[in-house]
Length: 71
Image 1 (cartoon, rainbow, N blue to C red):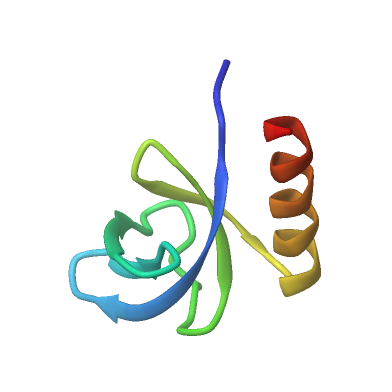
Image 2: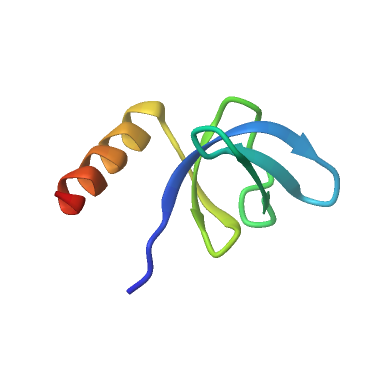
């Protein structure tokens, strides 16, 4: 099973990369599939790649669903 995690972009870097906030630590990801992403956007991240840009509401809904599964 594959899992995409919604994370917020905090910095755009060179070579199609960005830093995303993981609730404290940051992670460098590839934005090759979402080159139009901007700081402040939420992205769905899988295997170190942003695969989709989300609205804040979509990101919160996914996090909420993941928390329910965890229970």
